[in-house]
Image (cartoon, rainbow, N blue to C red; front, side, top):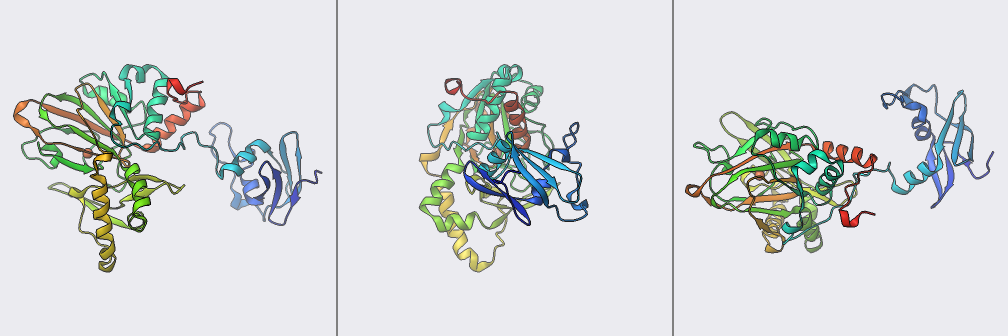
Length: 378
Ligand SMILES: [Fe+2]
């Protein structure tokens, strides 16, 4: 037996690269390689069915492995020490899709990752670049799209499946005689994230420009995570309020009455800002306790002011044949007014789950397609 493994009553301690690391016996028994079916890759071991608490009878480090024999069981568990070391360092299993966000401010539009649809269709490396851009930057621009419904479906399916909302699977942003949404008018559209009235506001949004010959109607895009991170520094107490309390959003019309509570500033499990939910035209009657509103409302107003600062704004024209794809929980978007008599403007849109995009990226990364920009690649 190797003296370096220290057995305790509920777990053991290993000398790993960062020093001694403690592992719980339940965890070590549960994550044994034999717990997973090699074919389905799903867990087939039920830790709750063990007759008693798992305790190591013997444990040793040998040939790059930790080998454990369990008390009262004819069972041996093996772990790669490198895997345990990585887990101890990260605190979770390695995730290639857990990439830090690259925050951006104004004048970013020329630097958006741009790919032709044919590249994304045919080249897994381009697909990885596309998926990675959405994870890191929250935005990418796909060019040379066909003027067809199928073109958008094909693009969305390179990242995941199209998910439905209260409205169905697709939406068309164009003038309507009896509009149910400000988007379907020629008016300016204030900065917002889409559909906060859905229980799970959509993750990835696609807007395929099919026609744009009108005067005006420029697209407005900003990185809400950048605004919120700056706001955390300038207004920490306000930030805390917006990142802690949920407010209601709605979308009511003849055929629907969608409602959900959302947090204006959303944090990921590392504590970084992952995104926002903001839409003043779909904000419902705030139902936080009235005394809390004494602080919440001014904080909310100061944050909305921050979102309006020119230092964050990108203003550009979306052209026919382009599809802008973005993280709907991070990229706050809007539109300038246009004059309807001057031409035609038609955007067709849909959504894909961000989890599906991350899954797509992980599979591509496993195949060696990391989606690095050509100049950054080895
Ligand atoms: Fe929108």
